[in-house]
Image 1 (cartoon, rainbow, N blue to C red):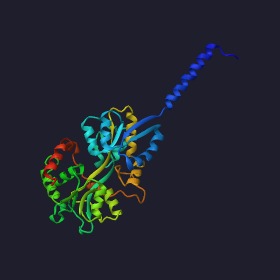
Image 2 (cartoon, helix red, strand yellow):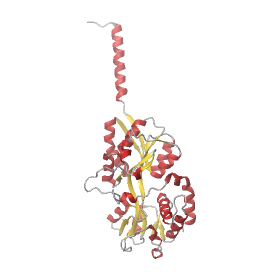
Image 3 (cartoon, rainbow, N blue to C red):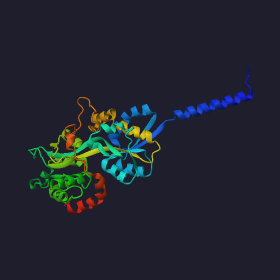
Image 4 (spheres, one colour):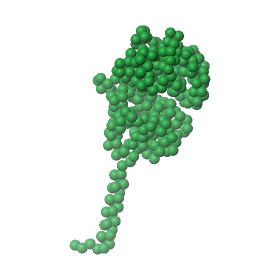
Length: 338
């Protein structure tokens, strides 16, 4: 049977139309996420393959931390970001974030209270900033941050130049004297006493390790992961949680409001809070998952944080602190640094 020219023409058009529709429906979406880089992104990328397969999406992680993610968010170059809690609050203050949708990000209802930063961001996993001490010299386990101000440790304390951990410690010390974020004077005064004992202002992990290893330091404010690493490297160092508590090293997630992939971004936020991602980051990097019912495999450790110690994690009012952060840094450099 011969086809007429009209039948052939319309049949060809229908075939082309169906082919194009199939190609469009099969086209893979891309979700661009600003992240930390390094080992964190390596672990996250590996577990993200599950999400990519389930949602027919390519997730691209852009490294660089806050220095890169914040301008990318301002320029609309990323859909969402994995970022420190403090920098998330800065993005929120600038009005750059979209609220998380609890109908999609259903894991919000399963998080530890400390992970609930705001309607615009939550913590996916925690590390801790704890007190590191020299086990050869400090024979009794320290119980308070204020012990670093004891004159017998003159020249034996390590502090970093002003950073997030400095602000958190100022607030904890202020609370010891009845103050808080809005009344930090006592905290600055006690920090100045501690600073009088500082032998080296050191911001690099390798430098802190060497100071403990060469017997030049008795105290430092250090992350739990790095304290464990230093002990494994043979330094006489251990860590403890003082009575005032300790501050978080938080990996937080937020969605940029200009994203054209809002539903996918909300789904990925939920995935990052779920068990697979939480277990992967705990297994590879010892981070503590923020989801209460995530059960870690036997033998997986998460630094100083667990279901019992997370109650000592102090979540200061960073929504306020970011508004005075520059003033505090200037004051720290004038009143604290010797």
